[in-house]
Image (cartoon, rainbow over all chains, first blue to last red; front, side, top):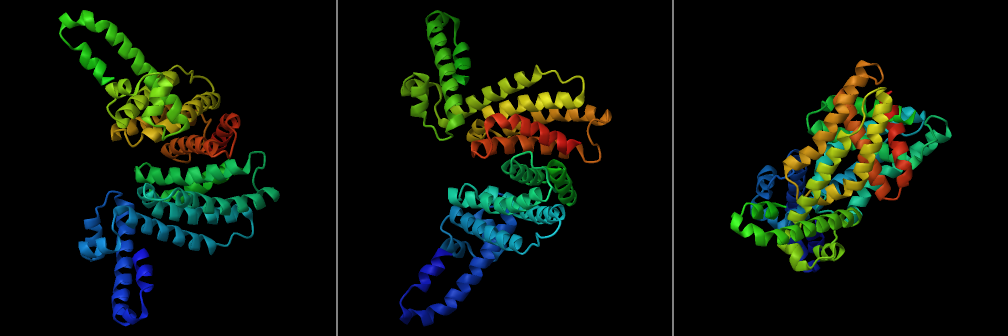
Length: 202
Length: 202
């Protein structure tokens, strides 16, 4: 997306002729990121050529917007992270802490399962700061809920809260790996994640 | 270590003159793998030069035995995997299933913590078969104990056994990551792992 921002910084006299191109470019970038998100989640090694085909754009167009696999992976991960943050921010985490945690776990499972393979595929291309963010923002949300639940006596408070956050994230990622390996069915995962996490916090 | 095996296959007439060299070579290889094991566990990016220094051998000697970083990482991982297997094989897993699982978890924690960062450092250099083995052999050991414990009524059997194996491995790896990040103290980890895993299986 850096290219678009760069273009928008060009002198005003060229803006008129550039505008239709910019709209096309944005549409193509969206289509490429959509296709990459869909395809990399299934096959972390999907080629840029296959992604271009999946997006309905030419190879030259794709390389025009993303000059390397790493650049595309970063854009895909950026969007996945932003969408996850937005989706989790809309959750109702008020009321009974155990029920609120069950809702947070279900939403987190969906995002982990949808984007987990993608983030792994992209992790080579992500900066340490981005990888940190993938971990920290969901952790902060879980931690806030655990604090409230521990204070209310809904969760055990004889183990460190950081450990409880770790266990919840480990269970989510473990479930994603197990589904990916075919050891548990995807439709069973949210229930197993919820029951196991709540059992560990009891 | 492939080099050594190749040398031992050389014609017998050179064996007399080669023998002292072979003993030296074996000692150097051991020293290099020892140093690499120690240093990579602390810093996954430790350089081959630093490892040579740590092993007390010259750069040329190290490159003579391991012609690439990947070759050294594979040797380090091979030995770590073999040592882990041997160590776990000596454990007493008979008697009360919950006590036996506590013993298995404690030993597994030690190995995960000692070798986990190493296996992550080496994972780029490992073949899919080696990575599979890192996962499968410990998983089989846990699964056998869970089967016995489920049959004896010591562990819940209303969730799939593969899920329980996944949760135990996820908790172990989560603990290793949390210690590495400084979120929990290494000396607290075995107790937290044991309590949390047993709570999840109750």
